[in-house]
Image (tube, rainbow, N blue to C red; front, side):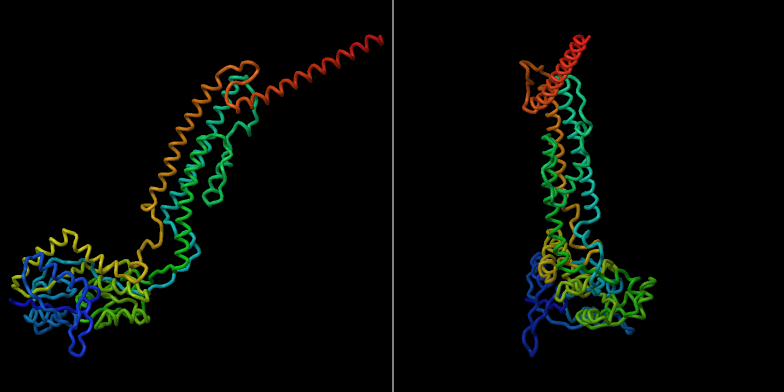
Length: 468
């Protein structure tokens, strides 16, 4: 049985090569090493393969028409398949065959992180949209509490007036107190609320929903704020190629690579400005250490390779938001290879089945030793509205139930207080009897006072008649 010659290079996490010193057998592992047997099995190729460790770059075309690096191994017929982050370019496609891309992330810009100190750190736990929705919810709840209190309060007083006649109640008693509801809502939002003073059940129901909402949001805010104070907020000094061009430090790339050729041949303004600053390295580890020591403004390589560096201790490097080019990573094969068609079809089938996504999660997410991936442009450690929208439904649900309760209260008072008072008392709930008792006592006191004044006038009139 023929043996498939496979070339592999140490490019974590795509391929790890450990050992191999003093004639020992090297140990291969990584994303591409896991992919190879699954790919051959999917293609129904019964082949035995042999992995060979390779040290070098992707390669570039020489003046004499030959290739260096991995491209030289493929064009020279020294290997049958390259397990290497080989970037497909129009020039390379003329000399080799390749499978469809297994990754298409472009080139990543590896930069050093820096601490971000700001006076508004207390706002960082929530995004701007989340803060805006919190403010809208607060104002809406305050206005709804005021409306429900006013409607139910007036329903009670109108019902009483229909039974006992028009009464002049003080304005502060008749009107809902919007300031009270505003203070109650705000105090609950900061975790220091108390029960509402209103007698209305509609008001109490809405306030309970608001209280539950505030407890959840306050707990989330406290947890995220504590985490942000424990883990320093980090940022990057260089976010685009224009930022790198304005820097006084050189830029690092892998020698004889497609990214080096990009800066050499590109007509873009930023690439032309960076061309004189370009320094070539033999490995990603050397370039990353140069960035860490402040010798480079950034190091640029395949996105997958530099992303792995950001996930290793001491976790002081990150990827800038901008990526460069398409960076299609392919499996390279010699020209006229009979493996091209079955391997290409198998790779597409594995991608459609979700295997490629699972493999990437295994080697790029689960293997991370740092707190998260590269820094996002819109910040990290924040509660987005997409994660908290369901919590706002608690307030909306409480408002709906509160409105129904208010309608029920108004109907209750309309039917209960329209009954006439009989047998010298008010029919209805204790609250009605209490209100009627107050006005009945005032009326009796006024009658007694009027009778006393009448007796005084009569007595004075009798004294005058006697004197006359």
